[in-house]
Image 1 (cartoon, rainbow, N blue to C red):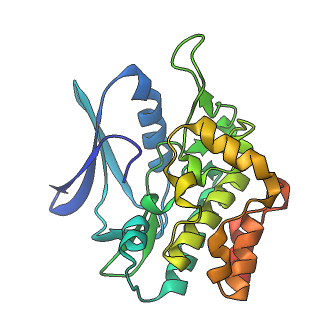
Image 2: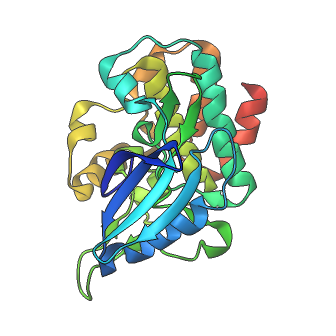
Length: 255
């Protein structure tokens, strides 16, 4: 959990909590404030509950509910057999649909940012460090550390929509849907969506070259493993024309 910082298990008012510890600094201050502001407004069974924030001299502590279980990434990496897969898929769709309904763009949907409670077998979205309220969507996805520096992309390249990765567009609900499609694909197949060479490349410029070389022809090879209906729905999410992607609510109703 968390795009930066460390996460610990703690206890607050006799309740188990997750404490995300982030070192203070100008480069992360805006992201921390944004995460706390957005996350504190969210109340939904499929969103990890925000409980508070504590600002220390050297650190900021973000406190959320503790979810005893695994992340989707753990499940995929370990190829775990899980019960109620369709229910978990619906949980994820409900969480994303709620975010979009209240005007929030997550900005970094991926298996590592979805937790599955082992006790209740419920999926919950977490980590809103890159989230944005729709009315604040003018904030740029691309930030420079200093004048003249190379642009730095926020997000996880292998889950980013092509319009964000290639054209540096700001994240939007439709780009969340692309990331959602890849996340669900990996969960349903317990396999990486992209070839390892694409997944493991660190330099964004190299990822850009691989994606742009084939443009709309490039789709995950693991799609062939899916049954017709989930294959069709996920293919809709991975449409290179962002205007033609379905909403999370449409996916939920047609699921």
